[in-house]
Amino acid sequence: MKGRPLTDKEVLGIAVLLFEAGLDTVAAALGFDLYHLATHPQDQQRLRDDRELIKPAVEEFFRAYSTVQMLRPGA
Image 1: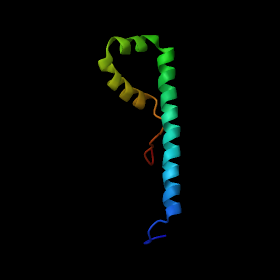
Image 2: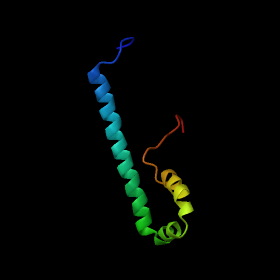
Image 3: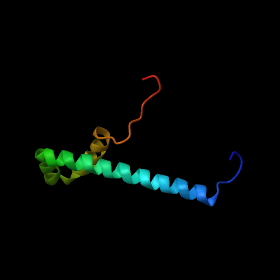
Image 4: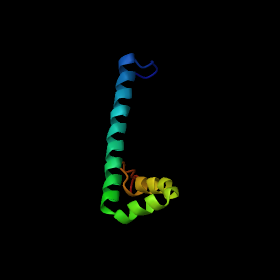
């Protein structure tokens, strides 16, 4: 493997893996975010009342309901 180009089959396998991993994390993130909004009607109303809050809310959802955990070695 070292020093040789990837085969078409290997490239396809990597692409499929990335695609499937992306689907899983996106679906989970949307589920967490929608569940939060369904169970916190006051947050829904704030976003309806002030659409400028949508972008920071999305960023906060990513932080609060992360689907991927990054752990530091030794932590």
